[in-house]
Image 1 (tube, one colour):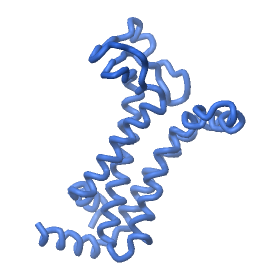
Image 2 (cartoon, helix red, strand yellow; image 1 turned 180 degrees about the horizontal axis):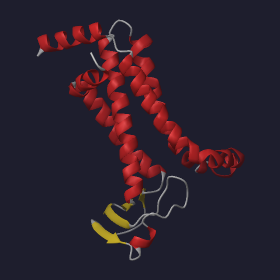
Image 3 (cartoon, helix red, strand yellow; image 1 turned 180 degrees about the vertical axis):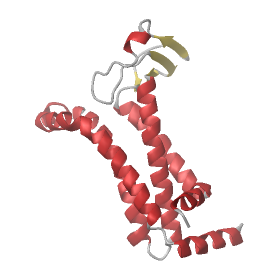
Length: 197
C-alpha cells in the first residue's frame, strides 16, 4: 500500500477528519490573533468592510519576515475586527492545512494502535501539536513585555527561521507518521469500523 493510499484512508476517516478540522480551525484563528490580524478594538461598527485606499502599493509590503501589511478591515461584532492581508491569510491556510493533516494522522494512528496508544499514536500527536506553535513564539514573547526583553530580542533575531522550520517539521512528521503506519493494523481498524457501521 502506498503512502497516498494511507493518506486517503486517513482523510476518509470521520473521527480523524473532525479532530484535524477542529485543530486547523483553532490554529487558523490563533495565528491571525498572534500576528495582530484578528483583534478586538473599541469600535461601534458592525459588519463593515473597508479597503485601504493605497492597497495596491502595500499588499506585498513586509514589516517583518513572513508578515505582510493588511489591505482591508472587516469589523465583525462587539469590537472584533479582522485585518485582511491576502499573503498572511494564504500562509495561515498553508500552515493550517499542515496542522490538519498532522492532527488527522495523529488521531488515526491513535485509533489503529489501541493497545499501544502511548507508544505509537501519541508519539505522532506530540510533534503535531507543537510545530505550529513555533511560528508564533516571537509574538507570544513580545506580549510578556520588559521582563523578557533579552529573551524577546533572541526570538526576534531568529524569527525568520522559525516558520520555515515549522513547515519542514510538520512535513517530516506527516511523512514519518504515514510511512510508519502498519498496513495490517490499518486493515484491522478499517474492518472493525465497517462492521460497526
